[in-house]
Length: 192
Ligand SMILES: CC(C)(COP(=O)(O)OP(=O)(O)OC[C@H]1O[C@@H](n2cnc3c(N)ncnc32)[C@H](O)[C@@H]1OP(=O)(O)O)[C@@H](O)C(=O)NCCC(=O)NCCS
Image (cartoon, rainbow, N blue to C red; front, side):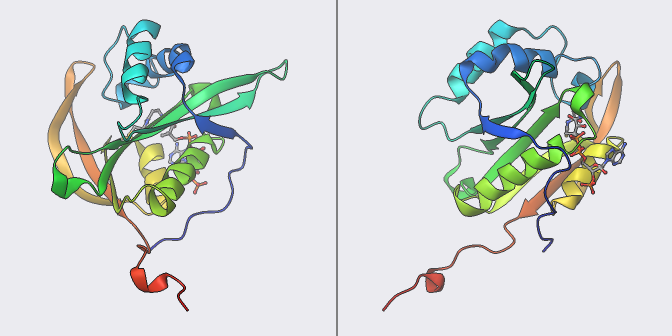
């Protein structure tokens, strides 16, 4: 299995999302350069994200939603990206699986922010979240995202034809997944 890559090129601060991040989520997810690569639709809003975050962040829901912050020109932290792991299914036999989503503001792209968030999600999944399989879909022409996922140990598992409507055309998507590189075992527990 692939080891996690080296530290990000740009220092970012990562924390769990809170409901008051809704405006930042709407800004990133609704950006015309970001939205076509996601499964979002135009005309998102802060109110929609407030409702979504309030539901997802409720105790016991099992989502992990993180944001990445960098200081602005005045030194104030600004949310420039978000990423999350979401239970892939309510079915008992798929409890070990989470699905991944990520979005970085265009002005912060290509500077290691996505990689830092991906590393944080994979670390949480491997060491805390009881996650053995992380899965995602990505449009086949999203080379930056595919490169990032492959760097973190995701592999392409298949190609969905006509997966989703994107700006008036049906677009294909890969399904990708990363299996835990070293699942914890009972015999690793030190005993006397
Ligand atoms: C895809 C996305 C999350 C990547 O985040 P990012 O912060 O821009 O990526 P990073 O700067 O961390 O770079 C990730 C890797 O991609 C590589 N990369 C950068 N630009 C690239 C490009 N145009 N083509 C191919 N690879 C590229 C980098 O070299 C880096 O690889 P490395 O770790 O081996 O150096 C971000 O660009 C984004 O949010 N895009 C729009 C929304 C989106 O596509 N989300 C994913 C939906 S599945």
